[in-house]
Length: 442
Image (cartoon, helix red, strand yellow):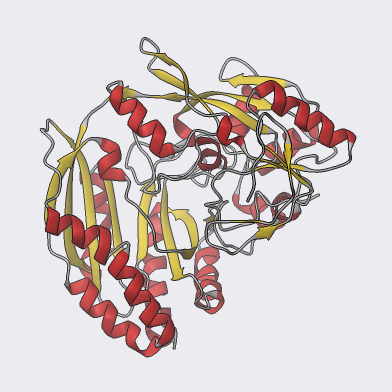
């Protein structure tokens, strides 16, 4: 779509998200090059009676950023503003892409402590929806925030931290775009370190039986189960002294192409055309894996390219319930006529103190289910969601789900705290849309 320069409006054209599941036609699009221009765009939208939404790179599968009003593209608000080595923080503009932040930090000998595996998102989009990796002790990207700036509905710029506007800080780190538009984020960072990754195939029965042991023994543990098989692939990331020993060419090809991109695209296309082939493909793909170990700096271990388009649902469950839920999911797939070509991903997070974090106040494990773009996903996701909600699950704010405000009020003890703050900061719902109406209520 066309973008504007120097804060001017561009012609309204349709916007769609990365997965192609959401389309919106805003009345106008603005690309501010300064915070002042963004504040002016917010004030002008209010005067014109238009809603305002900021959109990053569209990696959410929900309509969290969709609007028929003013669509703000923050990509010109990018880059590192300040590094404070004494405080161990970096302040970055909201439109900065995670990939660029990781590279820039590494050049400065610094790193985030933890991150998700997709690096195409803007920092504000990733944190606002609760993007996370996996970690025994280290939590989501939002939990690493030490301060943020927010343009509110009246056009003011609010600075928030544990000391300044602490009640806004407690909620706005994961605000789903409901409280205002984030313009800058201050993250905790640390000196860059090495991670040694060990990937190892393991049977479903063994990995579920030993899940708590693997969780306890590793800083970062995750695994993938291949539906229609009893096979999993496990990944353990732990700090090491180094030196860097990246994966060899063959090993990298298996991970990046067979499991993630080119070859994976081809087998998914075949599966979409001929669903009956999927179980056989899954058995072959899951057996193609072999154990490998490699060492590198964090972003080269945590993140990987994702070129194959998919649709995803992910739920956060109390950690002690994840194995039972996963076994129920496997039993459901085994007895159904579903054909699922994407692995199911299981990760963990420690409890945090952010009002609408999926890990708010409880030790958490995540189950993510995916379907290849263009294949019918509703039956699979509906059956999976039934299992996840029976365990008190909380859906990822940026991924497919059918829950509403009434449900969230029951699974988030601090839900009322968030909605009361929203009433105070945005009483006229300048930043509202249909998605927020559903998940937060009127």
